Length: 142
Figure 1 (tube, rainbow, N blue to C red):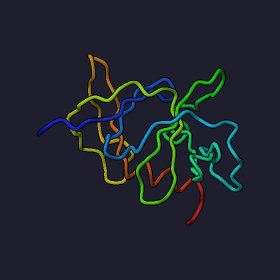
Figure 2: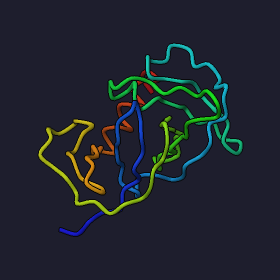
Figure 3: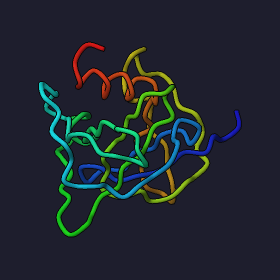
């Protein structure tokens, strides 16, 4: 099995990775975010990205590992490449793009696909489709 390039990032003090093919771009958050009525607990709000409204979900809160703070200009938003819907994941810091072996073994629908290693340190590999579905679900029924 060949390695797949992943975007590595830090969220809630832990390291995660999403397949690069699922990521459109990484941007600096345009805080303060616009309030989203009836959004779930992980919803940080919405931001304008070049004239397009992007819903922003705190990935640490979504995964249950804390939440990101935006003090001092920290944080980045990973824009997912999902149809025409604007969806961004607030992360603490994008670290790099690395080739990782695809993981498996987690139950279908789980946001976690497995654990990989980069430079001797563990990184949790995420399922892009499950994360996108979980994040979109924070905004209520479509």
